[in-house]
Image (cartoon, rainbow, N blue to C red; front, side, top):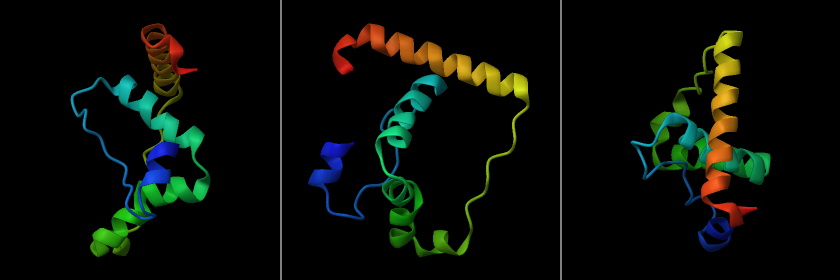
Length: 96
């Protein structure tokens, strides 16, 4: 992400996926890289503000907050994210 942000003009980076059939934990793992490696303003721009500039009707509707998940579901998701991180680190050990 830092390389992409250094290359692309401001406002030209949008959140998206070219891997639409990936398992949910894999998508969550890669999306968490944006959350942990970008400052809040960049994260907000990539997640929404840049898209609003391209699609002004998006700016008219506020983002819908995700529904609150029950504690067992949140715990299961956290375990899945941890397992996905472990698998990806085992597959790509030189990424640290």
